[in-house]
Image (cartoon, rainbow, N blue to C red; front, side, top):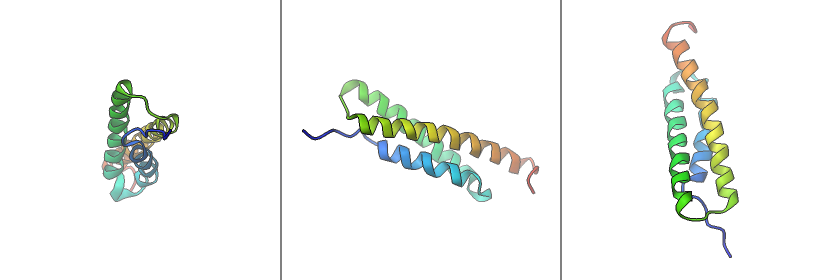
Length: 90
């Protein structure tokens, strides 16, 4: 029996992972924040779908890790964006 993967779980993980290093590049703060927000929304969408059908534990765990990393990346991107916008980091 093949395990059914949660839709967008790999995308959530990749966006969450990539949002952290991109948050610390000056020109890429906003795209990193957008990637983090999209990863958070993909995770919430996956949780909504999970209630309807049973998905495999690996894809659910992957989506959860993507959510956690996106939360960290989003916070870092937002902090760096505010620091660059306020000219604290020149």
